Structure formats: structure tokens, C-alpha cells
Length: 233
Image 1 (cartoon, one colour):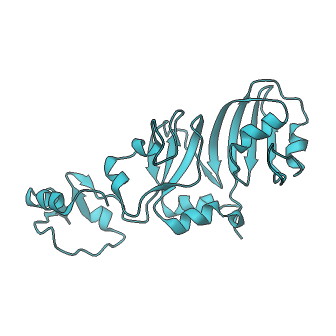
Image 2 (image 1 turned 30 degrees about the vertical axis):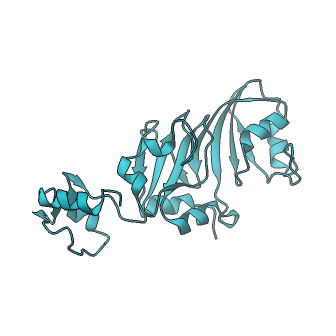
Image 3 (image 1 turned 90 degrees about the vertical axis):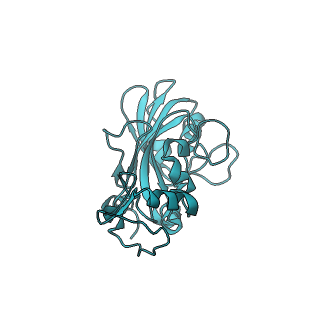
């Protein structure tokens, strides 16, 4: 779970910093069943134990950070507690938001859940709020909904995309696939340019208005289920 090496954990226990059911745990080699309530029963250095695998969370991704383990510059994983970067299995982003896109990003160490969400069979919708460089022409909704729009360099048209104008240069689009820079390329195909892009919903899960950019929150079972609302049969 990333708290440290065997030696480091032994030092924590000897210092009385690992509590189980309110009492210090002195033997670092003691085997303790990983039950659903363990995070409520154990404290390490004054804090509740992190949830064991599977861990799933939402992150309000700010601008300027990258969804990668390897690229240069600020990474989304740097916004998480350092020990979470050492968890095994590792946390991974569920899909990606590019460096200049903000909003709702899911991360999990549950590989089966990750693949279930991104699978085309799940039909999980993603909603984006867009600010454009030039005013809307009025035909965007019909073109996006047609299922015939082709992106440059591709041979397969996009699936229908829901579109709603919110003023002269603002719009909301909801899509069910995740091609490379899809929203930006959709508007580019119509002669416009995306200035800002923000994702505020995945499936039936909304980004809370009180979750600040860079902040994260662990998801419960009901919130994870909400991701699939209106998607899977």
C-alpha cells in the first residue's frame, strides 16, 4: 500500500504509531486479514489507513498537468499522496485528459473496473464544456448528431455526439467514444478552435462543485455505480 519498506514499517510499529482497534500494534510481522472495515480499525501515524485495493477516486484535474507516469513536467500523480504512487497494484488514470483540458478524471488500481469503464460496450458518456474562438454558426448540432463527421486523417466517422449551445461561443458536447483530442478536432473540422475545454461528467457521475482543482476524493460503491448510469445494460 506504499507506506514503506518492511524495515520502515517495523520502525513505525516499534514507535507505537500503528494502532489496531485503538491499541498499538507492536509486531510488524503479525498477519492481519484485509477486511472491508480495516481502514476504520487501523491508524498509521495518526491517520486512518488508506483503503486497500481496489481504490478508485476522482480528481479535479487542473490545467497544465499531464496524465502520464513518464512524461516531463507536472503529472497528475504528483497531486496525490506520495505513498499512493508506490501502491501495488499501481493507480492508473481511466482514460486521459490532455494537458490543456481540466475537469473530472477517474483513477483506479482495479484493472477490471478500468477496462469496464473504457470498453465501448459500456457506452459511458463523457460531457465537456467548451469555449470557442469564434461564434457558433448554428449547424454544429446537426452535423455532430449525424454520425457522418470525419476527422482529419481517419477513415471511420464519429459516433453521434450530443450538442447544446450555451451562448455565442460556449457549448456542451457529450460523446461516447474517446478518440485522440476528439472534441478539439471536431470543432476544427468545422473551422473553429477550442479555447478552453472542461469535463464535468463521466456517465452519471458529476464533478462536485466544491472539489477544487488539484483536489481528489475517494469514491464509494454508489458513486462508482453512477459512472455506468444510462450505459451498460
